Image 1 (tube, helix red, strand yellow):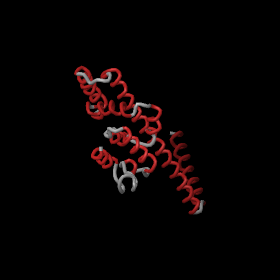
Image 2 (cartoon, rainbow, N blue to C red; image 1 turned 180 degrees about the horizontal axis):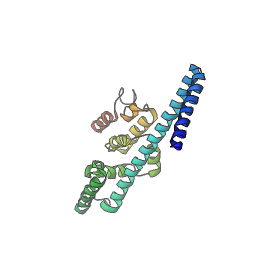
Image 3 (cartoon, one colour; image 1 turned 135 degrees about the horizontal axis):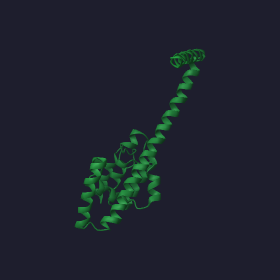
Image 4 (cartoon, rainbow, N blue to C red; image 1 turned 90 degrees about the horizontal axis):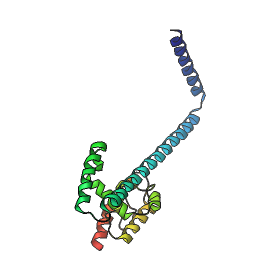
Amino acid sequence: MWRAISCDFLQQMRRALVNECMSDLPANLEDNLFGELKDLIVRARERVAVQVNQTLVMTYWQIGRKLETDVLQGDSHRYGKATMTRLAERLTQEFGRGFGYPNLYRMVKFFLKFPDPEILSTLSTKFSWSHFLEFIKIEDPLKRDFYVQVVRGEAVGGRGAQAGRVPAGAQGPGRTVPEMVGSARHAA
């Protein structure tokens, strides 16, 4: 009982002190403080998002590498496809639909199209898995590298980059990576 009363009393005193201190801050200082705190939170969230994205991309690459080297071994023989199908079923039961056969196949293709883990580590800080799914559709390595560099160097961050938007002049005004991929296929 005494402990509960003392905790309530302390909480009331704390609120009173906070209110008193806050009422003493001029509005412009409070606005500045709010802006600085908001910036800290936004930057922290952006760093977390980049880390999560990079971890997911590298995990998908490692899954693709394991499947290619341990199961397919450069050739998708019948036993390799059957093994991948069974693995996909088990992984889907455990982790959800993101690990079905089509996605596992994309992960293998991802590993084959981006075999250098050091380059991939750098790219994974700039691109989401969705970007890489578009890039692996480009069969010609020169065209793929070109589009990766264009999007990497000039795409606007945030929602624009997540949507795969490419800046004007990089193959047409504001075209998306899928539109560019389509153009690349028709030009080949």
